[in-house]
Length: 368
Image (tube, rainbow, N blue to C red; front, side, top):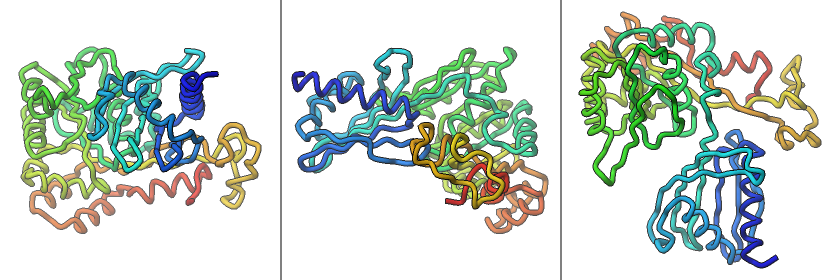
């Protein structure tokens, strides 16, 4: 086998292993004399294999070509998209590519967007019965703002898409603005943001407002201008869904203030704010259904399903905060965050820790 063939075989092996393990990310990291490949599976990053340093540039060039990036540009970060296929061609996955110049070469991260329409069901995203009813009640409203919060990689996008699929009944004009479009949904007009051409979130949102929409999904509230237009859309008879980076649901209100959203606009237009995190589930095959937490993780040295980690798959834990009348009054009066959290407790709103505790008591995850 020639060196070129060996490099191609190495990369195909990485792809096959990543798809087999249902990895969310492939990290290719150059060091002096060697290049490492790591996979993130169920939120956990672990070493997969290594290659000689002279292979790294060839692998990077191959990925750049597939992602239609500039292979001659090695001094600046680049972003692109491509489709990966397993060796047997039975599985194809859309991917996002990010390159970053480092001391020993370009680090490359491939994010595998291995979601499809069959995975999207608002009843299967980890909501408790009460939380599900509260979210559905907000989704069934003709206008207002529904906000999904959490850090990067917490499953916000899947929650948004699940909400959109729930709303797909043929009677609504639904349009989304995304960067990038991660899942293609039939029946929804999806707009891809293109900063280079000037198609920003705020520009696209203004244009959509003239397209007679019923439901608008904004992939992320990133700046005051986008936040302002999104709230105007909610105020003028549209149902708006979006995401925001915040630690929990009450903290999203403080983040909106930083984006120059008036307290009255928040109180009058917000229907529901949710927060979420992803947690790992005990492997069903080797962990079974333990009777107590001391039995949660058994000997997993020979388990082919969880690859000796003891965990298989993830689910989200949620905090769903519908805006009650007392909460709206507190927001209008610019109450402190502690006062809002106290009112959430009085309203019976479970925080993230309490939602996770339910799964602990059911024995399907651990505190590790």
